[in-house]
Image 1 (cartoon, helix red, strand yellow):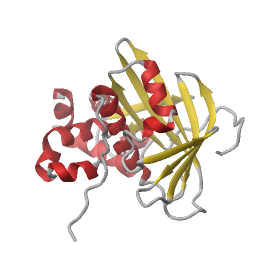
Image 2 (cartoon, one colour):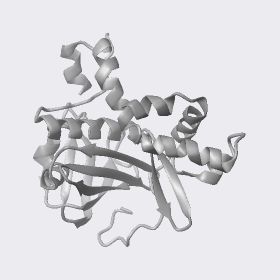
Image 3 (spheres, rainbow, N blue to C red):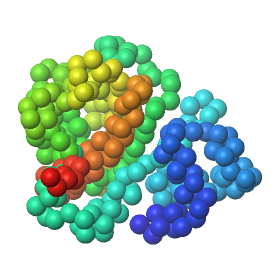
Image 4 (tube, rainbow, N blue to C red):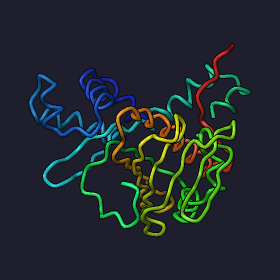
Length: 251
């Protein structure tokens, strides 16, 4: 956590994070063009942000893309700020194909990435991501999730379908690619694709989420991913249901 505060204690690094919040997946050249600084200086700041896990990078060909990773900041908020804002009773409410089979390996860069480390076994993490019953313990909205073959359907509290995910391709315990078919604003919302990557590191697992082909108007899914993955991490590490939903406003 010291690395997070050190990384944030500089206006240039905060400007880089703001830029990635506005447009994720930028190259070094794109970020350098926004600052009155040498390439080496920008690289040094990006290195400190990466060391603090506030950004994650993806190499595609000769380009390296940088993505904002908001989960460490969410953990800081949950630890110190959120208890001051929400009463315990309200905290329960605050609480997370191309859609065709046989799609070729994706060569484009993801629109959104997020990464976290979870103290759990590889088997436990795979089960949590692929089992419908497990999702009810950590999804920030859905308390009912149903599985029908390769299709998993998430239901909003009022019983309406909010999301459908179909398995596209799997490498057991390592990689899970699914369609992401949102329904919360109607049946005609375009679909996209999400990929979970699991890398075991001794007693912990590194989980990386990549979201591809996010249609215009659905950029807000980043907030949902933050809440869901925070709930997933908490549930796996504590055994307690964790649903980090949005605060309810007083009537």
